[in-house]
Amino acid sequence: IKKLDELPFPAWQLMPPKEYDSLFCKDPPAANIMITRGCTHKCSFCTEGLRPVRYRSVENVISEIKLLVEDYGVREIQFVDSNFLFTKKYIMKFCNAMLDSGLKVSCSAPNGMRLEWLDEESCEALAKIGFYRCNLGIESGSEEILDMIDKRAGPDTFYKKVPILRKNGILPVGNFMLGFPGETKKQMKETLKLALSLDLTGANFSIYTPLPGTRLFEELVASGKLESKPDYRNYNYVTYENNLSELSAKQLRRFRNYCIFRFIFIN
Image (cartoon, rainbow, N blue to C red):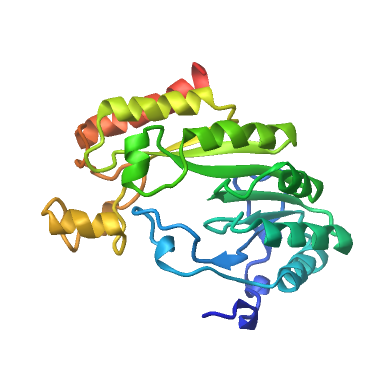
């Protein structure tokens, strides 16, 4: 679907936000909104990069937010796009439209955002409309792993951009992944080191899970390291039996738990 404005708003009357608790929410009730589909990047572990970016008009998004605020009492909007900051031009236009609308809500981006388009101007604009938290798809602290997964953003990017978020009162949460194919324990330790050295307010450590349709999945199947039709009952980012790295699945889960412990208690 190329013209997303042609889609109706979700049937919010069937799931009134007030009737549901929201995790990691500052001002409940909260509602999820998606501005875009697809992604501007093609990370080899992600399915979104396979789809071109399409986006709703700013006017269409503002109309849905107004509906949620006025008809359903929503006080927080959580943008669940794969890459909320897909262009600075759009974000600036959206922030200006939000200010003109007079809508007062808290905002967050829990699904992740890339920081290429973030600068002082755009960050200040986001803060003015109530942005208070965002998740960052950092993935790894190893340059070799970042190159392998085509992340196209290294640690230097985050060292430069995270302070801009903090300066404007936006809380950054890092998303990290462990157990990429061929990854060594040394490279995983580099990820933990990056997580501890950045000025983050939170960190999620996931176990790499090969998603069907991604380039890494196809490469693993072609090399015989993965079945073409795996058991999807264990397909999650916490308990997945990942034997693709230098560590065994059990060792990998233990190291993941260690990373969480280190970040929370010894950071």
